[in-house]
Amino acid sequence: MVQNTSFFTDLDAPNKMDEKPFLRLDLEDIDEFIVPELRKLTKAAFDVDSIVDAAGEL
Image (cartoon, rainbow, N blue to C red; front, side, top):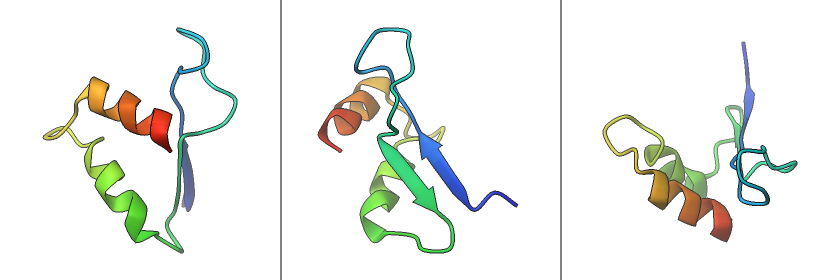
């Protein structure tokens, strides 16, 4: 079972995955801070601009 997941974007260079993830999820130790960020990745709330903005801030 996957217990750690990393989320990447292409903020450093268009169409090229950044070397560092903007968000890491550890299912054994879920940080309350990332729950709202995870909600942005759901189908019901998916908004590319919001995700990219959040990734730039994290």
